[in-house]
Structures are given as structure tokens and as C-alpha cells.
Image (cartoon, rainbow, N blue to C red; front, top):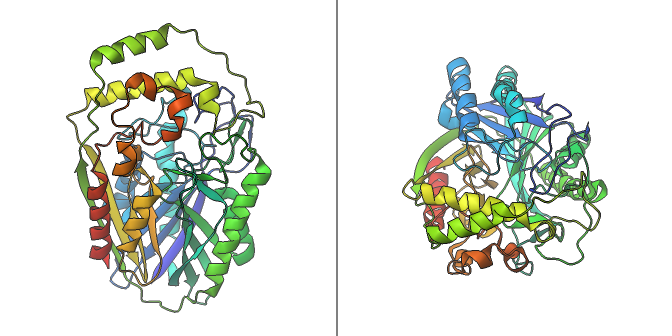
Length: 455
């Protein structure tokens, strides 16, 4: 087996507007951490190639994925189905459209130059990793980290707190790369700072690299309903957003990754590399709201005076209550999203389900903010003898994907009530899903089938 790793800086220019929350108006005055794109390229003894790319972005789009895959295939011979692009989902990065299947937020026109060169820069990480290929060994395992994440929809419910780890060593036994996945929104930081930042992925990577001397790639799991610490929707007294709390989460996660990785022995140097990818056409959500009601509420919201947002959030503003304190932009955004759903109601969502086997480990990826319960079900269907990484936020962006039973709780609620942030903010991820109820079962089944195929 051969493996190579590379990292490039993708930090946007200072002076660009920070977004990721509707009530955020500051511009970037500093970069607390470099935002990075990291690539691991592997090749087995049958010359089968695969690439895993981790990027510090809120999400990726199909346009970015297709561009990077096209260049990697044309120039390096990496099959398009064998390149995986995963976003860390940091809310300290630039929210770009990137040709996504669902527009998460309106892309600011000032991002145009940055977005245009981004595919070339991300491809550069793959290029560097390919040309750094060297004899390598691989092993994998898993651990747990309790107490640093919470179900933000139902805070009393458990979450997937597993820590999946893949260790890649040089042939001499020195750590070369550590891949790890964990399910948690990148929202430790919010609108209180005018910084580009990689959220908890930065202290996680720094800790692992400092302890093991290897490049650490963080891959985001199924975090649709999982938030840091006690950041559940409506919590009256959550931990503050601070770099101290961010760094504590990242460092504790890093310590668990180091513990698991240190116990692994990467002795197999003839590991298989197997990849597969399929497209799943999922039914788009059929709204119960009549057009006349949408028209009336859209007109009412448009006629309301725009609020003036402070450059930086006051200490009492938090991600658990920002929508209640500043409801108008969230309501306008929701109505615009429903309009888009109505216009495209007969157009299926094209969801890529991608799987890889790397030695004893397996990876399966989807383009949703999938709730953690279905993610756990997917993992239980894996046949891998080592770690199984179940990833969301991969290769495209198709929005939130709750469980069917979650969606049923709001399916018949009138539009005016759904838009009431005091009453239904807790259901975020259910109120704004683009997928028809029941389709989550098809995604789970397709993901398990893909895992078993590569095994």
C-alpha cells in the first residue's frame, strides 16, 4: 500500500463579509486559524487509487466536487467515484453555493473571486498528496467522548458520541496521517468575533499533530441534530461562545483520538482500497401550505422594516436564541426556501451515496445534514472489522434530513406557527428539510448496501 498526505491554505481574504447566521453583519478582520484543505491519497497493490479531502467550509457543493474530481481523474488517474470531499461544517468559514443541490444561504457576491479559484486550490491538495505517495500501513479503531455534545432538538435524548479513527503509518512505523470523524455542528463560535476560524477542528488537529507528529484530517459525521456542549435550542443558560470553550472541546476530542490511535498497530501493508458510488433519487418535500398563504405571509414579511444588527453579537445573544431575538431574517429565509421547494416539487433530489474500504476500515458518505440516529443505524450495518466512518456534508449539500418520526411532529403545523421562532425554533432541521417524509429509510438502506459492497 502507498499513501500520501498534503495540506493547503484556503483562508479567504480579510475584509469579506462573515455570514452563516442571518443576523450577522461583521466583516472578517482576522483569521484565528488558517482554514485548510487536506488530502489523503491511497493506492493498493492492484493500483486502485482513492482520495479523501477534508475542507474547512460550512458545506461543499456538487460544482466544487465535480471540478476537483474532473481534474484528479484527468491528471492523476483517480476515478471520480473514488474521490470524497467532506466539509467540516465550520460556521467560521465562508458560506458558498458551489453548485450545491440545495442553496443553504444566499452567496454574497463578494465571494465570487474566492469561489472561482477554490476548485484549483483544493485540487492542489490532492495533487500534492498524490505526488507524496510512499509505502504505508493502515489500522483503525474507535472510542467515545461523552459530555461535549448534545441533541439540540431533544436535549434529553442521546447522541452519537463515538470517535472513529484511521491511522496511516509510514512503512517504518511512523505516523503519517490520522483520519477521525465525530458528529457535532461547528458552532462553538458565533457572531461575537470578526474572525475566520475552523471551530473545534483547529484545536483537535493541533493536539493530534503535536502529540503524534502526523497530519490530522477531521471528517464531519451526521450532525444534523447535534450541537456542541449544551447548545440545545431554547436552553436559557448555555455555555458561552468562547475560544476557551471551543479549544476545550477540540482538545478533549483530540486527546481521545490520540488515545485510540496510540493503541493501534498499523502492521498491514497490503491493505485493499475499494470504492463505490451511486446516485439515489429522493422525493422532494411536498408542502401542505397553499400558495395563497405563502403569498400573504411573504408580503407581510417583506413590508416589515429591516432590523439593524450590531457588528458583533452581545453576550446574551447565542445560537440557542438568536432566531428568537432576530426572527425576521430567519422567517424571510424560510419562506424563500418554501418557495423554492414548491417550484421544484416534481424534481427529485439527487443524493450521492459513496463508500470506501481502506484496509479494515470503511467510510460511507452522504450530502445531508443527517440526524445522528439514522447515522448510527447505518454504522450498525457495516461489515468492516475496524472503524466505520459515517459522514454527512459530503460531495454536495442537500440540507437537513431528520428521522420520519421527527418530521411527523411538525408535518401538519400551519405555516404561520412554523415561522414563529419562539414556538418552533426547537424543530430546526425538521421545519426546513427538503426531503419527503419516509425517504430516510431509503438513504439508510442504500448506505448499508454500499458499505457491504465495498466489504
